[in-house]
Amino acid sequence: MTKLKILVIEGTARPKRRSIHAAKLIEKIGKDIEGIEITLVCPEDFNLPFDGNDDENKDPKYTKLTADADAFFIVTPEYNHGYPGTLKRLLDSELKNYIHKPVAFAGVSDGLWGGVRAIEGLVDCVREMGMVATFTDVQFPRIQDLFDEKGNLLDEKYIKRIERTYTELIWMAKALKHGRENFESKYHEPK
Ligand SMILES: Cc1cc2nc3c(=O)[nH]c(=O)nc-3n(C[C@H](O)[C@H](O)[C@H](O)COP(=O)(O)O)c2cc1C
Image (cartoon, rainbow, N blue to C red):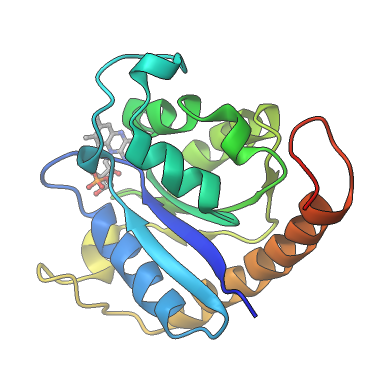
């Protein structure tokens, strides 16, 4: 059977970002789950200097990744009670490649709230884009206490939390892939 393709999207290009530790952990755990293929995506790997979704301002590499993806696991830090503009840029660029696909979130902060305000903002945004958000997410509050400087996890409880979110995301990914392939919609061709 073809593997489900899941993009783990790191939501910031901040050079000293700590959320990358969470993204890499989510990538690593995903790589041990059967039946899925994980690709970690970082915003700085794409050429997206302008806003919007005009064809000439897309990065073809990102277009292809999102077109092929069956699901997204977005890791967002909280910046001023919202999510980073860089992440919004990635989301804005590819409307049709997100429609009828699921998304799970991990929120990251150095304060106590674990990025929940960023996640809540994203739920509104992805709904407008035709995505389906899982009801499980992962919060990494006080990220500085959860990973050491090298990115080693200091709290093993996160492994189960991430696996639980993958379980839900994979269920949604299978259901929506079946839907995209079998039910007519003006947004995609049935196969
Ligand atoms: C511009 C900016 C705004 C921030 N605003 C918040 C905030 O509103 N709430 C919060 O808990 N942490 C906030 N932080 C701290 C981040 O949560 C912290 O940097 C954390 O490590 C996750 O982001 P990172 O991946 O950039 O490291 C902010 C950080 C930056 C750079």
